[in-house]
Each structure stands twice: as structure tokens, then as C-alpha cells.
Image (cartoon, each protein chain N blue to C red):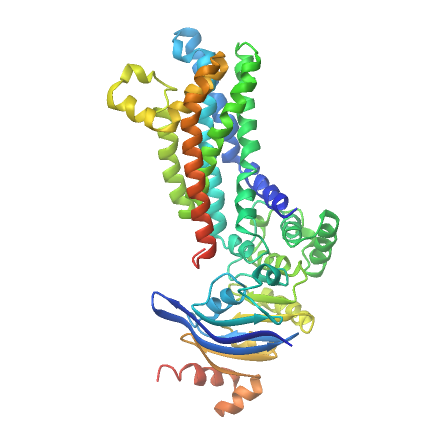
Length: 244
Length: 242
């Protein structure tokens, strides 16, 4: 009941923020529509809907870090978290309460992106359902980044760092250009980070190349596990420290 | 049984004492005011008493139990209204109240009933559906106090409850706090003399992290040989600087 009440509050705070609604739901769809319109006039293989939609779903999730991070940072700076820290809630209640609402939001955003992609001519197949499952570790990765930023930074700094994360997710993921065309060190670094692997796993799921999903997804799962463990440890330390 | 017993309570930040060897007992049902200028150690003391901050040394017993060893149990018996207004900005006044009631263990039905009671007793009924960020400073502070009361705490910490409020809003809150006297143990921090004088059963005067004097208004004036409480406070608080 306690976790549910806290989760409900966090969902309401997020869904009642018009900026969050625009960037979570509106912006990825605008990108899908815009790039599909360009594709209709100047066909590029990368912007074909089967390739574009999985990339946009991953890019859209990068905003989850911004919103979860900002929510936690604002709670800290407005004393609301102090009130909650004085309440009979454990650190696990807090972490679950902050993380749980983000998952349905992330899944809703992904489903919406694929629904628009279907309207734009993407063929329906069960692979889309698989692609939705594949984004769960990606969502956890971005939620973990948000929890980590929110525990360490104030809300203004969360905005700044989030824009770096969003840019990394955009440029080093192979959504907007083929990383093989750039090659060299840029490609190597991109594949040392989780974003390109997240996009490749989602694309492989949509294309039905099942054997290609896990090799990429393990990278994402590894990063997500690492960042979540770090975020949880930092949050717990903050909770037991004096400077909330 | 004392509601709160503090022995040799000390808090140091980077070697500097924020609170030093504080000894104090507070009776059940008492309204005890911690009075002091900014930086006297009042908020640090409240943070330690409410389990938000670990003491560097010393002991805190709440309702007969050691705070450190029984933190989760004792947290259910206490509630805090922090110095800054601590409300969830995008939630309505009612949603804020029901949230806290549920966090302290109420089910949905009980949370609704308790919220109804709080909205009525703190005259918040007309703004129950307004998002808390749209409320005036006075209304937000009232909501913040209602959120601290909704769990029916045995011990209530009010940290500078009227800070930043205009005279009318302050007086209204005083009237409400007076009604709570005897129903629960209240520890109130303030740097308004008049507030401590008119509301509290006893007053503890803090300066530079130390509890300099404890007593009723009359006792403190007698102790310092002054006719006004403000003079008694100045006399006690300024002893440190001399």
C-alpha cells in the first residue's frame, strides 16, 4: 500500500507536467512523422519505418532519465523528501516507488511509437511485441540514470546532464546515421556504450532476426544492472546521510 | 514515562559542533518550544529527534524506546512539518493528505476519512481540489501541518511553522496549534519570542548549539531578573558571546 501510494503520487507528478508529456509522447511522434515525410520524398534505407521506429523508441526513452531525475532532485530540494524520509518508509520502498511508475510510462511511450509507425505503413507482426519487451532493459537503463542523477544533483544540473545523455543516445546509437559509414574510433566508442546496442537489439526484434537480439541486449542489461546498482547504492547512502 | 529523553546529544559537522551535549526531557502532552537565533542548532536537533540525522554521540529515547534501535517503529508514532513547506506541488491538497495517510498505513477508505477531517479542521475544504503549487504561502503551510497531523502522531515536530507568514496567517496557525495542546507532544522550533511565549508550556533556549536554559516563561524571566520575556531571551542567548 505504501509503495503503491508513493508510486501513484510519482505518476501523477509526471503526467501532470506538460513538458514531460510533450517530450515523452509528442516529440518522438513528431520525429517519426517528420522523418517519414522526408523518407517519402528522398528515400534513405536508414529512415525506412522498420528501421526508424525501433530507433525512435530507444531515443524517446532517453527523456525518461530527465523526468525521473528531475522529480527526485526537486523532491530533495523542496524538503518533500525530508518529510518522506521521516515517514515509516524504507530505502527499498523509495527506490521501488520512484522506479515502478517509470516502467509503464516507458512502455506506454514505446507502444504509442509503434502504433504511429503502424499507421505510417509498418507491417504488423508479433515481432513488434517482442521489440516492446526488448525495450524493458533499455527503459531500466534510463530509469537508473535518472535515479542516479536525481540522487546526486539539483534539478537544474539534472537538466544539463540529461541533455548530454540525450545527445549521446542520439548521436552514438546509429539512429540518425549509419555508424559503419563513420567507422573508426567513433564506431568503436559507440559500441562500447549501450545506446547503439539498444537500437540494434530493437531493430533485430522488429526484423525477426532473433539470434541477433541477445548479443546486443546483454550489453544493455549489463549497463542497466551496473547503473541501477550504483544508483540504488548512492540513493541509500544519501538517505542515511545528513544532507538530504 | 517521558515522551522524549535526550542525553548528551551531540552533532558535529566536519569537527564543528552544531549541537553540543544536549540533555533534555519532555513530558507527554507537553508543548515544548526550542527557541534560538538562526544557526543555534534547533533544526539539527529536530532532524536528530525525527531520525533524519544520526547523532555523532549521545542517546535519544522516544516513548520509552531507543530511537536508533527502533527507528521504523518510532517513525510511525511521529510526524514532522519541515521548516520549508514540504508538499507535492502537482498534487491537490486532498491528494497530498491522502498520500501521507496511506504512507502511514491507512487504507483508501480511512485515508479519505482522515483527509476530510483535516480539510475541515484546517479550513482547507475550499481548496481541496486545487493543486498545492497554486495555493498561497499561508495555505501551503497549513496543508504542510495538516499532512503532519493526518497520521495522528503521538509526537509532532513543527520546525519554524510560521516562518514567512503574515501576521494574520501566523495568528490563525497559533490558534490551531493551541487547540492541539494536550492531545499530543509537540516540539516547536521558532525564533519568534511571541510565538514561544504564547504557545509553549516550557521553552528551551539554544545558542551556538548548546541548550542554555529551560523553563516556563515565568521561570526564565525570574532566572534573568527581567520583566519581559524578550529581555530574558537576550540575556540568556548573549551569555555565549560574552
